[in-house]
Length: 267
Image (cartoon, rainbow, N blue to C red; front, side, top):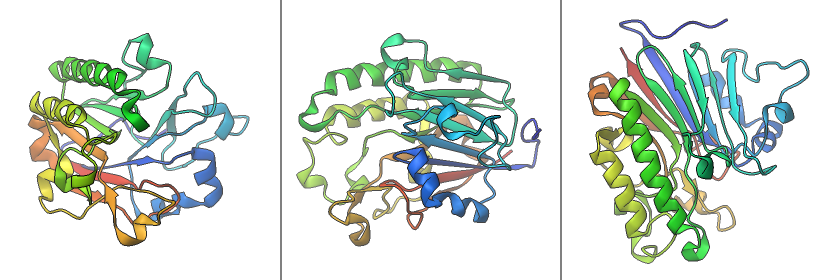
């Protein structure tokens, strides 16, 4: 059944990972790292699958220690998608942000817990040639407004592949990427505006130094050379800052072109 949420003095471990295809990662056995991580909540992006495609009939928990499981699949088969697996039982679960333009791609899941909202997000990529940059700017605006509405009710933790390297320190070669998707001035300013509206970047809050990345180009074997981008985040309402005890990246976990990121909160 799981438990209902953290009490005062409890630690809560949260993990997030863009798996670049959940069924492929399951075949690779890449979730073995969970045995060394006492995760309470696992958020996945780019699942490219519906619940029916990855769960047996009758449905079972993929991760028995995280029995509450929620999927938001895209209308287009094999595309995008998000999922959350958790030990604490949420009070409510919502798919999307309430805007049809965005919600058909399965990019956002909101779980309400007693002390906070958790929002699992897979932000659209602006694509090569910035063909989708205009849409991305609308997404950024609507996401910011959505998170601010939640934040007025209770604190928010949001995570996922946000498809932006915020600062030059967040990628290995900033000088050659200023006009590329994920590092345009518009995308960086959009994320900066979101943070300024009342949120903090947990990893950068605790780790001001560079050289830490969460995505690497697979064809160029960039992970071996640590030539990457930090585009996967855990962010939280600033009033949750006292609860933030750890923020970390797990670059040794293979199976995707991204690696997991996580935080520990203590209430």
